[in-house]
Length: 184
Image (cartoon, rainbow, N blue to C red; front, side):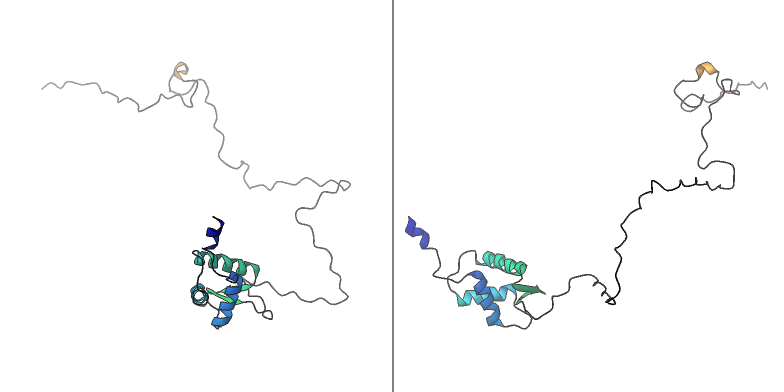
């Protein structure tokens, strides 16, 4: 059974990173080569590729891009130029720092937050509240409790202990007017 494992193995293919770099050099496109052109070149140059060729190509391209061997720009892969400056990312670039004169020494930056109180320092005078102009406090006034003998309402015995005003719940009953007979 050990001989069956070697039947599916392609005959001496170089590693995928080598094949990718050779394909990019051979294609020699100005803006780099996209994934499909790299794949077609590898398929035409090296015959018997494994079943998962496209998946392997994607994995190796991503590894090479993350490690910095390849540069991915506008859906194309190119070899990194050692003399080229790094490409700028998205967003606003940082402000350039002004060079300082050789004799100037910078003080360390202030720490963030409120400075601690001095325990030996004099106590601060109390703050005065700014008056609003009228003698009343802000906000809605407090609800006052009704006196026991209320004016013309229900007697105190019918007032419920749990709830607010002395009126019963619901709509008040309709008042019936006494009927007067008219003789004709």
